[in-house]
Image 1 (cartoon, rainbow over the protein chains, first blue to last red):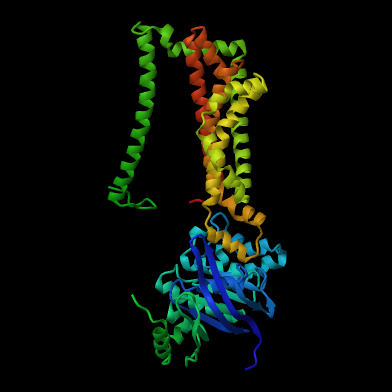
Image 2: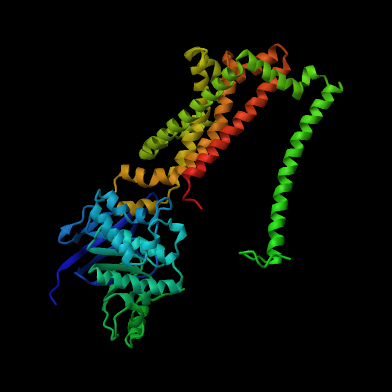
Length: 257
Length: 272
């Protein structure tokens, strides 16, 4: 396969500074993401998973090494990258439509066309009737979907997902990961998912990067190949190979309580 | 028994519950009105029966007569409107300037750190003590009174609103940054709208503060307004005039508070 590389990290390290001293968050991390790939990043909590996404999003700069998106060094937030946070953070004073338009508003790209596009996204993903509703009138799953549409509205080519389902209950979480996966494939996006949930990573991603404890380094990268009928996360969980991947990653994470 | 034919049949227990709530509400209202009426009647009675000296305590009928005569002299509305005008200017100005200063301090963390001890001192200083200075500098007129009202509400507003700004969730700011927002956009799209409840509660505090500032100002300047009537009435021992002014003042203050509460409801319709 000779795919185009869209994201690449080259020997990236980052240290956080505070009055108490400096804390190395990630150490010498290198990997490449091809177009259309779904990458899962798992690691022990607090190991610097979110830091990697923040670097790709251009919110922070690496101490050493470089981060490239579409071959260009990341200097700041760019239009080709969309970021989905751990919670939906919908603004309670805006209705769903206004929330979905937030990114376009900031980029100064609210036009009749873009509005129609957002309306179409809301319709497609079952929020058409809730355009004028306020966030606290929606269920957790619907709010998360609205947050995804807010990210998709700016038409990013790469989606960064930072434990986007951690605020949801287990059932909603399974349904939402199915939905989000379908949406991302349908819209043809490249995605990086950070999670502490091994099953979630295996069921959604086609490559899983396992990180060590802080300062994070790459322990292993697994190519995930599952024999499943329709390739949705829920049916992928039924695949016979699923358990082997789970066990392998579980051992690498080496969890002690 | 409840009516089976009504379009929304409710159970016996629920009907009982509803009527209990309703009865409780009526009892509260009734008690409130009774206290007021009893107070007025008792006051009038003890004054009429010469149990207390109405020259010193005044009495409801005298208050009504005073209102009438003030009205006939054509000065009632003048005094009331001057005081209300000064109060409104005071709290509107206090809120706007206070919010503006809070924005500056939010914008520059350095400025906020520098200003911190000054704000603490100014906040704990009783602003009334500055009255004579204000009169000497600005002159004994409505400007001095408005300045007094402004001073009383300004520092509290700065501190309250700035705290509100700081409490906005950093993740909401991060969300905007992922879209590439600059500082002005962060201010306009999240800091200000998220702080509207704080700003409105500051307005509510300011209404009260502004009344204090204006009445104290009128005490000191003493040319017109309800504060002037109270001081004047006290000096010439016309307790009728003092009581009347206090009575009008309490009604005006209550109405203004209700108005702000109404504004709050209107602006915060997204809060359910």
